[in-house]
Image (cartoon, rainbow, N blue to C red; front, side, top):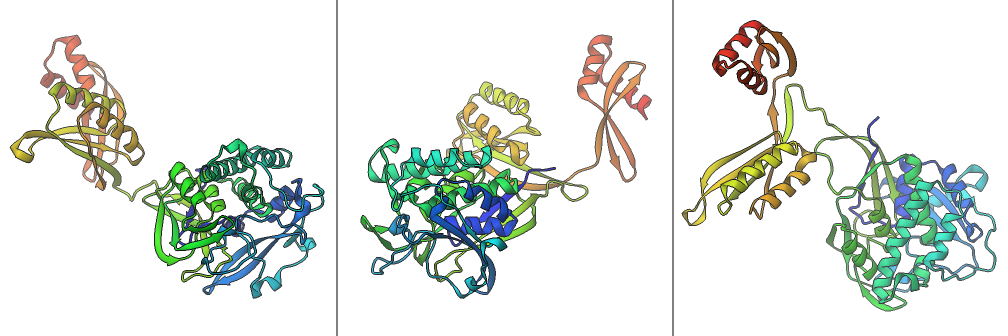
Amino acid sequence: MGKRKLYLECYAGISGDMTVAALLDLGADPKVLDEALNSLSISDQFQTRISRVSKSGLDACDFEVVLREDNHDHDMQYLHGHSHGQEHSHSHDQEHTHSHDQEHTHSHAQGHLHSHQAKEEGCGHCHRSLTEIQKIIYNSSLTNRAKKLAESMFDILANAEAKAHGTLKIEVHFHEVGAVDSIVDMIAAAVCIDNLGIDEVIIPALYEGIGTVRCQHGILPVPVPAVVNIVNTENLTLHITETEGEFVTPTGAAIAAAIKTDDRLPEKFRILKTGIGAGKRTYERPSILRAMLIEEQKQPAAGSDCIVKLETNIDDCTGEALGYAMERLMEAGARDVHYFPVFMKKNRPGYQLNVICTQEQIPSLQKIIFEETTSIGIRIQHMERSVLPREIQTRDTSLGEVQVKICHLPSGPRICPEHESIAKICKESGKSWQEVYRRIIEECR
């Protein structure tokens, strides 16, 4: 079975609750999630609700962490997505005012309202350190993979917050990372990814709004500092829209950074299943996160093949270096490598290097070109080519064993001896290349 690939379409940003909701809608098992959350030492401080809501007419899943009434351990105020002139008192990924759809949630016995029993006493407003959160994760019943994912999420967020506050990660004691709802969101996301058996996660870009938000530190610009730090250090792509509001929360950015394996979708793929997670905020665009299980279509249409051509012009490199570059490219698995003589700027003679390869070979072959030539830029062209069905066979002849390529045409097979076999026979027998070639063709027909 091929790898299970997840595509997260973050056109309306990403937050912790949106991610968990989208993964649940995609098929993650709520019972598995509930058991994992019940095993946390802080499970007395929250409940979770899973319900259906409507966002701009689209049916979506909603995941909500409901804190115990005397627990005020919320995430950073600046994560609400409100403009700085608005007052608010709820957490960054969960609002405590509910839509009309939430009247359809049920009790714990029915699997939709999950009450987590007392494990940790006297923690009404905890400012937990990263070490304390790691202990919560370690002592839980999560699988090893889910634990590693959750730890990675918190580590990324802690690094971002430490940089924002000008301190060391080990010295960070703050409720932004210690907030119960953030802990639940990130652990729940890790559990759902693990439960779905996701191998690869593709996140092309995080779409963010503009403006400012008020937090306990004052008025901050959007994107907020923690998100900027995560995007910067974790190599995420950020796309700023012209819509006012905060679409990307630090929790959402940390989750994205921890699970992302690629930022490029396959050229062709099938959508196996779709899940939609609802956000709590209302913006001009629907507050939803769409998750898709996809399957890459690697088999081209009959008689065709997909290839890539790498192309660069070089006018200041020696012939010896160009020859060695060709050798390395072929050894690395390039389908073909060739040079064309060209005239470049200022009438300088040069060479155009062309490398035929597959999509997967692009990074390794580009590295060789940059290392072995003086090129400072490479053009990439994706092509579809027509190909004949072909195979390599070993044939016995009067001159010895030879390898031949057989191409299947509508009119019948075409046989072509492999160069290496002919050259070997020529050296051993002293016969000419043309004579050996003709003899092999005659005997293999």
